[in-house]
Length: 289
Image 1 (cartoon, helix red, strand yellow):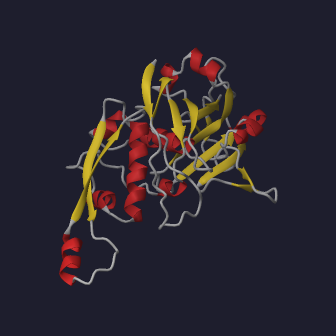
Image 2 (cartoon, helix red, strand yellow; image 1 turned 60 degrees about the horizontal axis):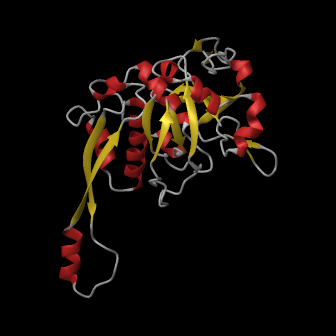
Image 3 (cartoon, rainbow, N blue to C red; image 1 turned 60 degrees about the vertical axis):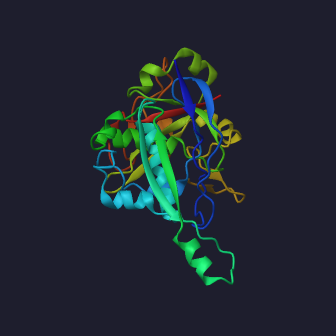
């Protein structure tokens, strides 16, 4: 078992106002376990997928991607948030990515002295950023392109960490793929016995897609834990709202291979249910206490 530093990710409502404070740091927690992850990634951040095809080093990062990361506006905040939590999924705890971005230090207060205003506008604040790895699903991204296996696993991880209510909830991440399969121990399975559902897809595909399914017996339990991106959010009128681009395809029993008893994860699911009979093993199953 490894001691994992968890950073609850971002709030994730749909239709976030670009002027709102939708990039929020949350309290860091240390927990014992394998791939327990606090989750609440911003849904609109999931659309920012153009950062990833080169290795994550300043000398190899695509110029447009680097410009996005250094943008002081709301788009830059979303780009940084996406990359921060993508790195948390992809890199292992020994890896990190650092860069800096700047913004004007000029305030909005009125001042009769125009010269003072000009001086204020010339000042800049330098923000030093370091994003640390947590899970290690695609550590090779540090030195080379994120390959398709990595794209799919990081996508599933990011989708699993989305939270409709913008609240961090500690979840267990499980998979047939490494390192999750090896690191899920019996103690964690016992502590997180309620399988919520599964997530898969590829945000870096020519046509990005993210799928989710739910464990039919645990829908009420998942909603009680403020986890609704596998089950769907029930509106007051009884209709079901999906979590942004995450396409909920129904109960996992209809679209995935049955739960593996020892690890309590779905070994594979139909990649595009209703459209293709192809299956994928690059699926992350989530579970709750």
